Every structure is written in structure tokens, then in C-alpha cells.
Image (tube, rainbow, N blue to C red; front, top):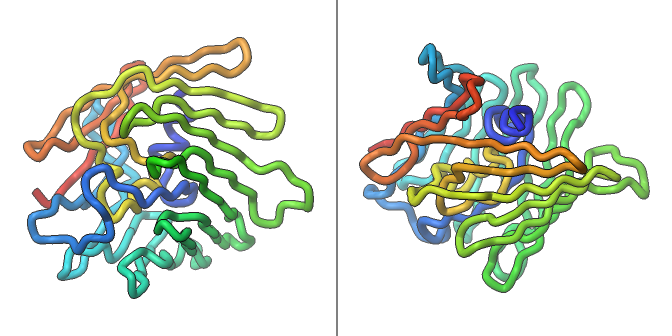
Length: 256
């Protein structure tokens, strides 16, 4: 379970599952000076207090997300005339191209993301999205760059309980695992901020709240991950730590 957490939550923008959905407000609305903005996410050791591997977000004068910067990538966020993110482009630490190109369906939801990561070859992928009648992501299907014809995609299927993910089922070839989100807190998820770009880092669509217990089953093996949080006055998590003795966690910083 620890490996899954690291891959989905602590590794930065080199692995991405984009969901530009916010449970806080409609991202087609213009940001205002009163909006809470996510400024930084960092890996954190709860015992030593050390912070590493941070990702920082900057905004333009209108409050729109402008850049996403970490030790591994330096990206600029570009918007179409309709106000939606059209692409996110920049360079990685070796000077290779990194880009996310977004396509939308008639309802204004993301239908496809084409991810490019040159280092020196392309380690990216193409991902498609499916939604239910409530506008929630119910399936993503990813195919790695350069995959041969007939290759099986990496599929994740979601069920929801209101605004929070209830289950996720991952099918990777013959390997299938199912995660059940056992419990949530009542506070707001930091990954719903930043025009939804922060959801790239979280590795899944953004639930409204923060899960506190996750049970994952793969064959005859079941693992459980528990988390605890501290919160800001605005109701967002400012810290997250795993309750497995691993000394792994995250810190979140905001403009207010």
C-alpha cells in the first residue's frame, strides 16, 4: 500500500491522471481575490519535520493558475478562449519536453489527455475519460506512448458516493485490484484547487473530502492504509500523514 501511496501522491507530475473537476466551485467561473489558492505541496516526514520534493503553483493577476514547478518539471498552464485549460507545457530536469494536451467533450468535460515526457524518449501516454450522468469520472483508459497495436490499456473504473469516490478498480493486463474508500473526513480536498491541475498529482479524480482509510484487495491479499490530517481555518488539509509508522506524509500551503 505504501508503494501505491508514493506513486499516486508523492511522485510529482511525471505520472498524471488529470481531472479538472472541482468540488468547491465551477472552474469555468473567473477566479476572485477571495478564492483559496493552493501554493505548494511537499513530501513530509512527520517525525523529523523534513520537507522534500515540493511542487509549487503560481497564479496570474486574475487568479488563474500560471505555472507548476518542481525539481523535475517546470510547466506553464495555457488557456483556451473559453477559459478552460488547453495545454500544460514545459521542460523536465534533463531539458526534455513535457506536455499535457487536453481535449473536451460537448459537455465541457475532459475527454482525452495526451501526455508527453521526453527523457530522451517519450514515456507519456494517451488517456481517455468516461463520465456518468452526474458528471463524475467513472472510467479512465490509458495507453503508453509507443505501445504496439493490440496492447491492453491500463483501466481504472470508479464508483461514487455523492462527491466522494467509493471504489476504484484497476485492470492492468491480467492483474486486477480493487480499492474501497472506507472512510472520509468532512474537510475539503486540496487537490480540487488550482484549476484542478493538482489532481494530476493525486493520481485520481478529486473527491470533495479527504479519505482516512483505504482497503485494497489484489487476489488473496488485502492491505489497509490509514491517514490523519490537520486543517487550516479555511477547511483544507495542511498536513497528511500515513498511520503505518513509515514517517511519510505531505504538507499543503495556501494563500490564506
